[in-house]
Length: 69
Image 1: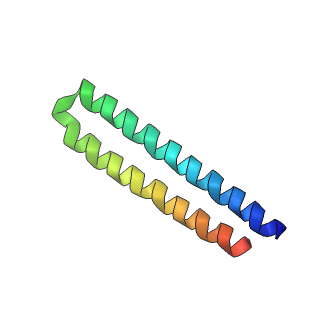
Image 2: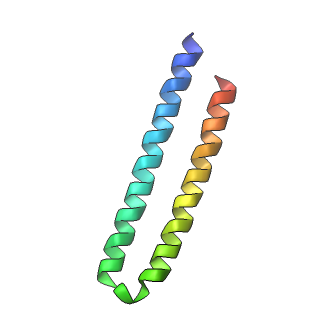
Image 3: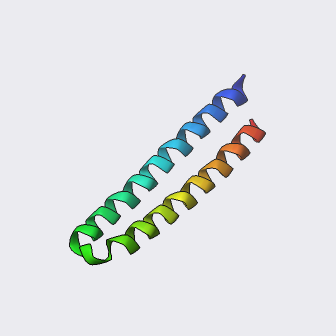
């Protein structure tokens, strides 16, 4: 029972961290696109790749947390 609650806390922290990371990435990309609209397609591509990498690391962390719990 104790490991289930610790796993739940860990999973919650993972989700919060991913939300903050993707939010900051998107916010910075929007600011950059506002400053330099002529390269917005390059910025958008880089943002999508970064968000996908963050999601991949989060998925890996969730799998590890579930295996340990």
